[in-house]
Image 1 (cartoon, helix red, strand yellow):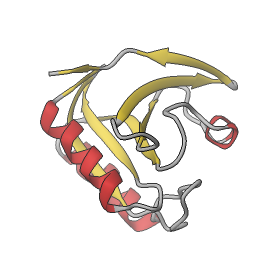
Image 2: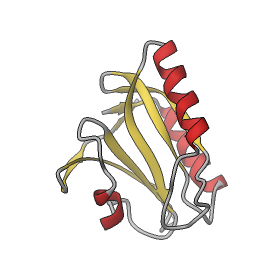
Image 3: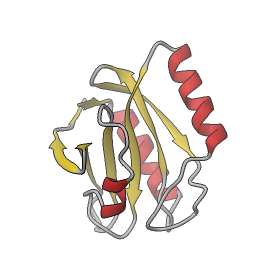
Length: 130
């Protein structure tokens, strides 16, 4: 997966602004090139769980389709834990075709990782910032 640097910066800022809670949203683009982020309100307002605001989620998907993009990934932050899927993240990963990007703010240096999750099996996916 390739992510434009401006998009990476946008989602890291989103993660920092939403502290101490998790942030969440979609990453969209063409195939494996992420060209647009869709920040969505975490209605859980919690540091270890997220749920999309349904209206914002619907609006994001509508805009993605309108712009002839595809939803490539769901992103969310881990304010206090590493950038790896939690048991809950794995349990709630219903779409095997989408990537799951996690932004960890647990240490001074921000860490971003991407994963594919299929039937409870987690596979790491390389990210290239361009």
